Length: 347
Image (cartoon, rainbow, N blue to C red; front, side, top):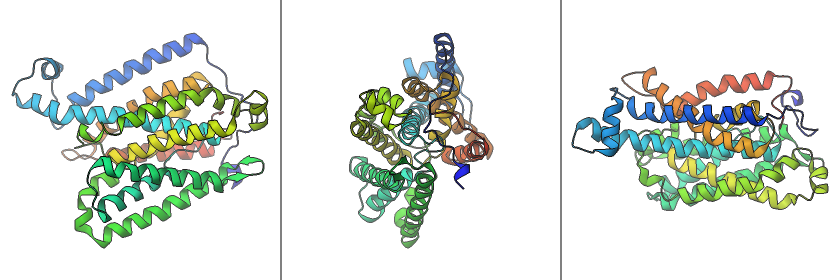
């Protein structure tokens, strides 16, 4: 079993990308993201022309297509952008923190902790305002993160296998408990059905504004910790020799993961595999430099989420698949491929 999860406690061996490659990749990533933002607004049950999108944004009228853009598609797209950034950054952070290339908030149970806490807040305590239940999401995400890190800690450092198994086990238990709560009173939990599947459809921008400041704080904390996380990739002893304050760095990373993963789950429900795939793509482009990985994750993750959401609008047309189901279909084969590789992307 141990052989299935590669360790990255030795020296970093990935090739560091040159400035030109990073710059070209950055331009491509920005271009793809901008294109997907436009396509997300244009494509739906009917395709709306770019000129109509332009008029809806800058020359508003009572046209029905403009109404659909402003009140439905634009909020959906902006939520996909914000949540995608949160999911990608949380995945990159948790992989750097645990030095485990198979880690992400979904696999390690962080999403499950936040989801269970939100279910209790909404379905049991009757809290309907996101300003109330977002705190439950933060607490649930934090508790599970600390539990997984504690269970995976050994005298020699973090044990990737143990953390993955602990995360999957905790996630399964909390997922079962969440389902039991929902089955106990289906009427009370009926409104959470699409949220449980992980969906950005039908979400209002009002859900984003209370959590957006926490996302900004988390991004700042992540970039503050990035240099120390680079040093920690070489091992704790070498990091300490370079002056890294291990406890401070881990606290910053844990707090950032909690805010990003908990906040994203509070808005759209549990969406897995985005945080697993995106950091690997970033490392293939830029090498093991954490600050560049974070920058690319901020661009690639919302692109993946928006592309999955657009795909979900066609798979069972005229219906739609929630984006969380689409990312699971895409992410599961990627996870299998990563496990079967003799050596995953170096951290």
